[in-house]
Amino acid sequence: MFNVERRTLLRAGILTTLTAPIIDGLPLVPARAAGENLLVNGDFELASDDDPNQPANWVTSTPQYVSRDATAGRSGSSSLHIQAPSGQGAPWAFQQLEVVEGGIYEISAWTKQPSSVTAMIKFEFYTSPITTADTWVGDESISHPGSTNTDWQQVTGQVTVPETAKVAKVYLRYYSPCDANWDDASLVFVKMAEPVQLEMFTDQGVHYPDVTTGKVTVGVTPADGVLAGKTVRLAIGQVGQGPVITRSEAAAESMVFEFATGDLAMRTPYEVVVELLDGAGTPLYALSSMIIRWERPTTLNEAEEILVDGEPFFPVIMYHVGAADYPLMPTIGVNTVQLSGSTVESTLQLLDAAQDAGLKGLVVLYKGMRIKENADWYRELIPAVKDHPAVLAWALMDEPDGNNKMDEIFDGYRLARSLDDEHPVYMVSCFPTDYRGVEHATDVLATDIYPLDNKPIGTVGSDIDIAMSVTPSKPVWQILQAFYLPNYGWTYLPTITDVRNMAHQSINHGATGLGYYSMTDPGWALVDSPLWPGLVAAEPELARLGELATDPSARQLSRVTTDTTEYAIYQQRRGYVVSVLNLTKEPQQVTVPLPRQLARRTATTRFGGDEVIVLQGRDPSLTVDLERHGCRLIEIP
Image (cartoon, rainbow, N blue to C red; front, side, top):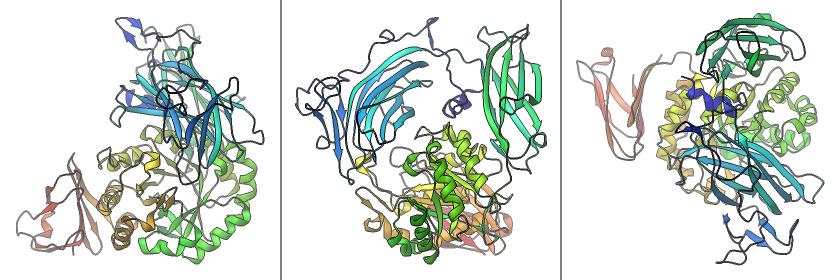
């Protein structure tokens, strides 16, 4: 019953081990001995037979920017050279190899880079050598931000192969613009992970005062398979001090411990420790996690809404937008922009520009994609700008799961909140399996699933469902896919119909905010794309969806979602609203049964068409024909 949670716990850093796979009763062992380098030509001394400027055994993204440099090796004569201007994405080289599920591997590579460049070793895990979205399991990244030392520096770390994974892609890359080198890359098998005997997660990481009861859910799978005679002990206390809450119960496959949050001091971090004990009371296995009690930000109410001037606010965010384009944002319904000032002065200038354009700002704290190294930056920036009227929230980290920062976000949250009681902390998570871990260190959870065109568009709605299930007292927002970045592998530009469909799904499933990624990126400008006119035309529809999400008189009467279609019925003070969606790439007809009191009323398609339908006198319903990913918003006064 804990398989669904296992990968969540692993990626959140709560679990550190996996059960070794068993084949015919024997653990599957690696094909090569521990200590042997699995990467071929990791020193880049060998050139490709097809192109002497390319390294043998490596796949490169763009040969004009990624090449073998025969004059600049660390230990030999050659290295991997990556040089790219700002408009060329993030070039890379990778190898694909077989790995063992549950195996622990150590990666090491050496980088020579300017201080302004971040190096990244990335692992992508798949269930088969056919590496597609359907076989993707997860990924892991190990980064090395630039420093004043621009000579060769080692990047190293360990990864545990997740459940079901059989193949890994190992990437060496930089974030452009860059002119840098990799060399002496190695990947070695270390050992099989120990069997998991406990799995644990807390229902929340940050407990607001109105949340009076906390829960710790535990799964128990003893290594010997025997539960009888064993005990599970829970202890909650400050690190280095005695516990303030303890519980002990006979071990069972599934257990839930409840505790009164009022027993915990405010703004004080507590460690939750769960231990499995044998019959003699000897610990066999232990896990830990951190929790804290903190007041809600004053601009976040118990209805999970963010407030501006005391009223519920429906944020529509734009990423990567320069101040010169701020005046364009209201034309597409955007009211909030990501702000990435490098100094207090530049941040205040951006906030002033946002205020002048009628916008709010998400103030980025993760300068240089860092958290713990930015403590002094927090202390300088937050007090200096927190009273600016354009501040909406603090963006603690971008995709901490994808950027390997999960172990830093809890302390980052504490520091940011200690410097400002008013504005919430905001974070985006890119993997549904990580939502619980990210939720534990933020006041607003945003997601960015970006399904098109390799996943069903209905993934957006199911993605929100997962996020809502792990955020019992916090807002969930959705960042919509609105970009075309072929240099990064995103070769599909969503249509306005796609974007409208994803926005409808988000609201139907409970999101209270939306966003667009992105206004600009290397090689991409939203305002120059075919999508821009559609976004301008859809602005009134976006505003109407925002009303459904924030109007106190609006409530969702029903929602029916299948693999192919979805409809949701809302009642509002001024009437009824129906959202009807086609979740497939083929035309669909959707029939929506309506409440009987709507008999003989007139239904008018407000957005997505021009149908006007007089409803039948008995058992009223709507029948709507929809194109690929089509959607309608229908009003019934």
